[in-house]
Length: 415
Image 1: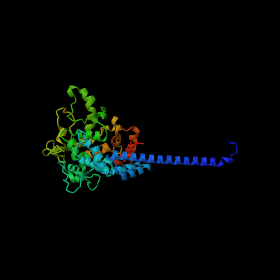
Image 2: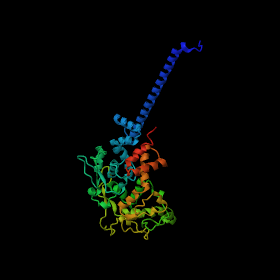
Image 3: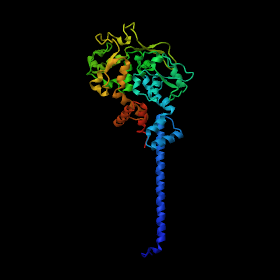
Image 4: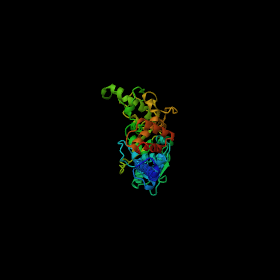
């Protein structure tokens, strides 16, 4: 029995204590190892998810390890950029991201074209993304044996897609200018607005209002119904808009004028543009035709204004008759000032280039890009804080859209 004299028990007690200490140390080491293994596994899973979301394919083991190391070092942007080095980010993710903007049906199942290729190039080369709405810019293929770019068909880009050319390679997809390739005057170029694909989709037939509506929808994330404003002056609404649809003037006052009052003065910037058919249907492209820009007087109008701007003049003869391509932004005042127009710009001008800059320099343009990227990467709607952060970083980066992709994945890469 234990009698208070511990001299007979000193060795066993010491041994027990030492054994317990060894076990404690071992458990601590095992716990540390498990935690490290768990963190490493978590970082690899996060890296894999980032790569899947951005490139749409699994990473190689080397890239996965590099991305996991980036994440463990707290550098998510570096991990995202590694994923964006994969050709599938350009050939698949960006192609599918952009293609719906190039057609009225907003389908992703459309051919690669000059609109899509140009936006891909701007993103890849980390240019000021706002330039897509006003710059003299075009991206074309440069691979050996490739059919030359044509202003009248899409064969050049169709062949690029069929051959699976790597759009991440600057030697394959090269930057040039529309004025050099298409012959369009430099002052008439307006980024993707004056590409052949955009003209075929939105300048064709009609009154060119489609180009304005889809530019707002695709690049400012607003449709006409969302921004109609009945408080603006109606002096620039054209003759083809009935002032009493169905014999009821209230419809015009309460519905039609709210859209036309702001839209017609701005889309007057497109007064000299049209898309003309030049041949039989093209395989896969449906329409053979090209963008036309009046540099001189049109025989039908006696001015540079396209005839489509003066059609249906008898609907309301006292309506506005378009004399030129001057535009004015009536929405700089009133409810639509919330779109955040740049105070450094005059809010008026002539032609599609300056009007495109008016749209691109708005706060709505910047936040729209953040929303679209977030939806693409995270497959859900962002909240207000996320949009604010993404938009702010986008602007601080010099409008480099790759930074938005890199920032967005941090919200949906998992814990």
